[in-house]
Structures are given as structure tokens and as C-alpha cells.
Length: 112
Length: 112
Image 1: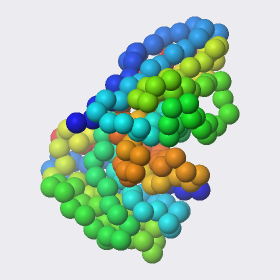
Image 2: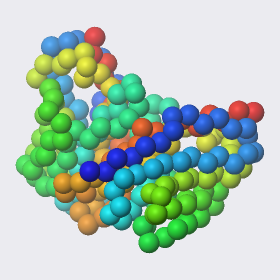
Image 3: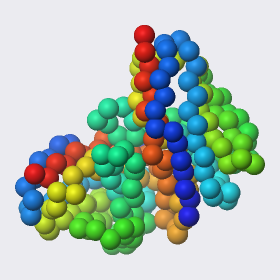
Image 4: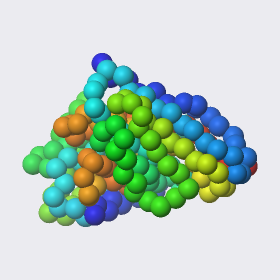
């Protein structure tokens, strides 16, 4: 069976510091991978998605970047965090030809 | 692209039925989804319906799809306190990558 893990689960970072959130998927190959953010207003915003190693599509201009150094690894980064980067970040995956997206447990980021 | 809208709050008594509604704009949607998010957790896929179906039932859950009105609903029979959560409907996004566009979520509160 497939599993998805992301870490850290909770993070408190000062403004201007770097960020690295990691996500890995086990039990499948070449998944589509996604980073979503859920801000205080509760809606989900797609930040990045990837259909293969090194292939990253950005949905919105922002202070964040994503990388996919390995097939089942997806990393969300920032060089300098802003207060507005605070939120709940969700990694998700999908079979290449599948229809359903499955989510990780989420990472709470508070920028202070 | 896809636009998905939901009401923000719903309060029901334990044992009653809950009906959570969603409207969408993209008539080419193939699958439509319902996810559940408990406090501080990631999103859990509850159920989905293919666009050539009008109804799908899965234990206490019933999904109704009105394609003409672009209206999707989730009915929870015999609602329990454990059903208290935020419920998101989702449909395919545009631009490739097998993305999903999510509604703002409906917070369901179950009262004793």
C-alpha cells in the first residue's frame, strides 16, 4: 500500500529565516506530487505540482520554491520567510493516471 | 478554470442528517470529490462521484450530483459527534498536472 509522510509536523520560524518542508511517498513510482497551503481563511491553495523528477510547476508567484530531487521526494523551501507564509502546508500525491489525490498529515508553520 | 463554492458553516443535532452543498463551474469535470479535515489534520478522502452518475451511496454517506445545476451535495445520515470536521468538495483544475480545485470548506458542528 502507499503512504505519504511530511515533516516537520510543526515549525516556528523567525521572519527572514529559511524553510525546508519535506514530503516522501512510499509504495508507488512516478507519482504526481503537490504542495497546498491552507491559510487562516481555511481555503486550500495549490502552490506547486510536479509530474516527474526535476519538473516543477508553480501556480502562484510567491516567496516559496519547490524541488523534486528524487522520484518520491518533494521539498518546499524558502530562503527568507515572511509573516504571510504562516499556514498549514499539505503535501499530496496521485497515481500518474489516477483520479484521486491523497494528502499527508500536514505541517504547521508559524512565522514570528 | 474551476470555481468551487460552499457554505461556511452547518450545525446539526446528533442523530439528524447533515447535508453539505457545493456548486461548481466547470461542466467538463469528470470526477468530483468530498474530503474531510479533522482539527489539525490533513485531508481524508471520503468519497467521490463520476460525472456520469447522479447518486452514490457509501454506508452513511450519500452523494448527489445535479449536472444541470452544477450542484453537488453530501448527505451524512445519523450524524455523530465524530463527524464534526471541515468538509471540502473538489473538482479538477485546469492546465494539466491532474490538479484539484477545492471549495472553501464547510465546517460541520454536531451538537448533543
